[in-house]
Image (cartoon, rainbow, N blue to C red; front, side):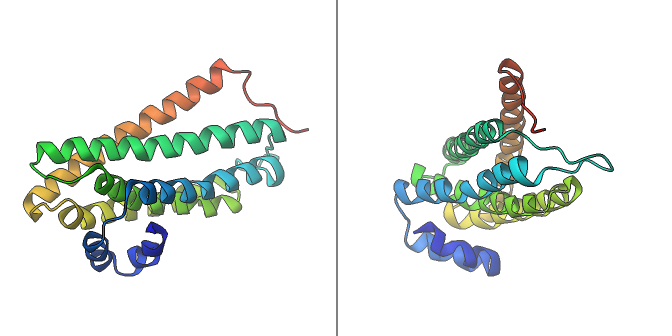
Length: 199
């Protein structure tokens, strides 16, 4: 299962990418990795929003009602999973443009590994200071980009020269996807009743 490779991706990513390339997992395993790892930021966001509250500077802690926090967490979970699957679609479409004959399952593997550090940042939400979460997010994003650049030549079977351009294209598309998801979340939040804060 893909979760077996997570430690290797953090300790020796290039070697672990070769191990993954030797035994490609199925679409089900790649998707199950995303489904499980996306639970980390979702559960932490629910707990932090409903029970511990968020500190936005020197003001009081801000807490959401349990119902609002649960709705937000559910939407966040489906948004995260949809975002990674969308990234896999982009990776797969770009692969054909760069003359790589990889399967969609391989593209999903790459997307899952690339997204894992960002999802692990969810643990930082247990310390409900915005600057801590933003600093952790920056570190997670940097490592995700590193994993992408390390994994592309191996998993997508591209030479290093093409791999760099391909990875840069994926990063650009990934950032656009992130903006689309964030905009969609804000619009959805505005269309619905909005947050209900705990008293």
